[in-house]
Amino acid sequence: MAALGIPRNTIEIIKKYNIKFQKRFGQNFLIDTHVLEKIISASGVTKNDFVLEIGPGIGTMTQYLCESAREVLAVEIDSSLIPVLSDTLSAYDNVTIVNKDILKLDINRIVKEYNQNTPIKVVANLPYYITTPIIMGLFESHVPLESVTVMVQKEVAQRMQAVPGTKDYGALSLAIQYYANAVIAANVPANCFIPRPSVGSAVIKLTCHSTPPVKVDDEKFMFSVIHASFNQRRKTLQNALSNDDRLGISKKEAADAIKQMGLAENTRGEVLYLKDFAKLSNILLNLRKQR
Ligand code: SAM
Image (cartoon, rainbow, N blue to C red; front, side, top):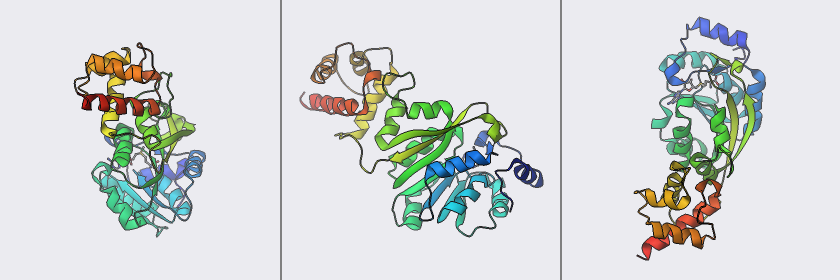
């Protein structure tokens, strides 16, 4: 089977199977060999690796992954693409295609079955309408992960790797950075896809931490503190924390915690690093216990 990264070959497959692009599944297929090579190189996949690919489409990147990895498992929701994948991947015996919604799949079970429960690499050109649920789902269900190298909307990639004091910094940056080190590997223009998406794209590599970089007494509570702080971005940290009913923090407790942190009264959440949110949430929990 001819390499699909070459536009002529992709167009041939599209015609042969009369493929109608499904917007609701975020179908934008890659047609640029340089971008494909860049993703594979950024992912660091070798012949020792088991790779999970989310949304193989017509199998363009899957062909590259089959060449570089030991084994590939590709999960595609669109059943009309399954016969296409059998055709475009017929030369490879190291690939398994699963026709399922990735959000409904027990990935922990797959890692046990295919990789002896040791960390896997995820590589994907993600459907943009569910980027965050897919990535956070992988992290929060504690799938053993080495890295996640994915194409996402450019703005989302920028938010993932943003640092305090920048406009892109927010709850997503902190959620990602709690689990991984995020680095943008490439910016990808719309003309590298068919059909062209209406937004710019970027490849981001998330190299997963083996243990979290900060110590928190209650992970869930820390993320509630983070969400409260960024929900009311223009308010001071003290007001944002005490205004959020889900936290159950009084104005005085918020003020005491900020003082214990050595921060100014008018500090805003957007200047705090992950380590600061970890410390702040531990202090707030303690203050709540002392009531
Ligand atoms: N990997 C291909 C490529 O790079 O050309 C296609 C990428 S396209 C941006 C996203 C793919 O994800 C589509 O094939 C789409 O059908 C699939 N997809 C969308 N939602 C999905 C879901 N919930 N579970 C699994 N696959 C999904």
